[in-house]
Image (cartoon, rainbow, N blue to C red):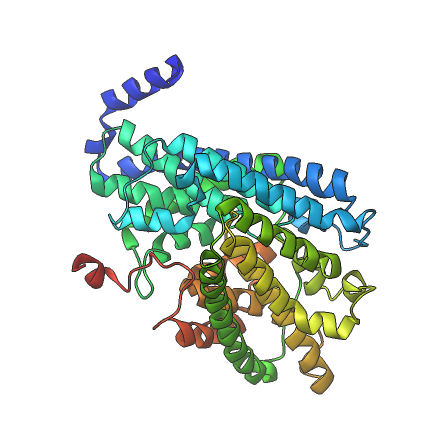
Length: 462
């Protein structure tokens, strides 16, 4: 431990943070946790840029679209100089991840590990800083080489692990250390997606399927705002998906009811696919390096025909919102067939990436799957009812938040996050309707986060 950190710990111990009133204690801790979460988000972001540059840019000659809030442009034109090297990139990345994961098995853990530890069903990492950082390394190699996974699991895991480390050093009790973990997780997610309020709500919603951890809201808001400020000082304060101007006629409300049912069904398919493919790879009877390499090869072959599913794919969300269909064009698959298949292909590619043993999150791919679904439904509704659907943008955004809100059993947090990411609240009524329908289809049985408990009462009696 550095001398500066020792002095800091002594100073905080003299202040006796653990014995301060609730608001004072969690204001101080929120600032500390938010700083750690912001640093974890920045670490992931910068490392992902590096691995993406090495694998996809230098090796393959492919530059992916970026979200507008991270420097992307709607004028994006896809170009791949050496497409035959896509499978090479994904296999190399998969093998590196498999070998590293052998040495750091705990570092494969994602958000479920934080939720499990919060509920006392898993011991926190013995060395949270090391394992959190290794998790970031593994996931940035996975995503940077073309694996279909999201940034939120490693970022949230690192943020939560660092927060537990801080709470432990300051002598907090077990209850406060557990709370600090989910606060750090939510703050890191709020930072990486530039959605601080949504990140705070995630800290309260993710532990349960049908309940809220209200105690987390105040510290999570403080921590998320601090983490957001730190992350945006480097990346800029523009909303993640840019400022999306959109509205929808009141008469189109029934279309969002239909969209809600479709998103609920897609969420169930996504969840079942993740579980099924994981079981399939586990039963192959080969060692973990071979298993992960097989997954990487399959992803690379899929990416040859549909590069839209490589990596986290968040940049395609803006292109879908603004219906830049020319960017989706393919020399292999007719455009209309490609658009229809993209939600399913992204589900399959994410399931194979994670099921074969690579490391990353399910959150961002879930948003992208919802985006592709919304684009398809928006185009369908526009062809049938052009007066009610002047733009596909509302359907794309609402579908994204409704689908993953249902899959994660966190509809409120995901809804607020997407509205923050687009800086548009005019579609709130439609978002509530579609989210509620999709959530009711999944909440009793399905979730991507297996560590979630039904509610506080059930958690206490386990």
